[in-house]
Image (cartoon, rainbow, N blue to C red; front, side, top):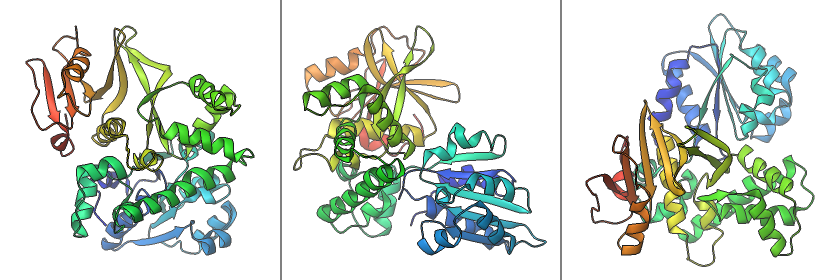
Length: 393
């Protein structure tokens, strides 16, 4: 497995802190590997560590709640600091009470989880001022390529546009095996986990709505339009139900919703969102045959790369024309438009005209899968293959 230094560098300064280190993200994105890499660094310094994986049935059955966890860790306490690693902590009842207590001991506590409630007001209010959080995502392309190289395999950008960056998907011997793995992962994350966690009774309706949402990535989100579409398919569902289901997907880190930015108000418009899949494979496994939605997957991938680079991202409205991303880092603002290709005149005019009347104090960028450089005097054109290896815009 590759060493994900970008994440490690963020977490490393907190190794000795008494703050609870929360490492959160979707299932199978590599959180456990990062947790073990942290433990390995600490053990190499000659320090004592305790690792518990609550995805393992014997562990979760033997330590089912906060009292049991506190009692178990107590047995390992001593004069030297104990570094405690709790993997998939959401499986422990009252976990927040346990970690709040453990941090008062001579410990440094690291936890992972696949449920965004780890970071919700429901729990962080109780942990206020006592934690620091880190969001882990599936591989971006440069990580996927490094892992493929490590295994002696080829993984092209075209593969990434379809199959995304779940680490174990790259380990599969071919596209059919990869698709089978991703379908099984989808069933576990999207269906089994959520249906059981929220006791969803109308599973067929839930699954149809989820399928529609995940195949509609990189579109402006409207709960009403989704509800109306479902009613057109003779699937009766209310807008509040759609909103609730979208909330479930967000809690499991299956989707992100990116707000729109209004230049007039100079603020986010939190009542408008654009919907993105955490990994483009959620779209690809839902299409018929090999008619993959490469244009929307490309935009989805650009978003994930911008987040990985550390940008705060919103969608920008330029006098009714949508610019895919407004990316901000270190006080610098970039406007980023994404298209699969601008080789045809209509596509070129449509994509470049989105920047009309925007002054040149803001860097304007268009990212496409074209090999020809279409840069102008005011707009930078980044080829996708170059952008995917950049550290910043």
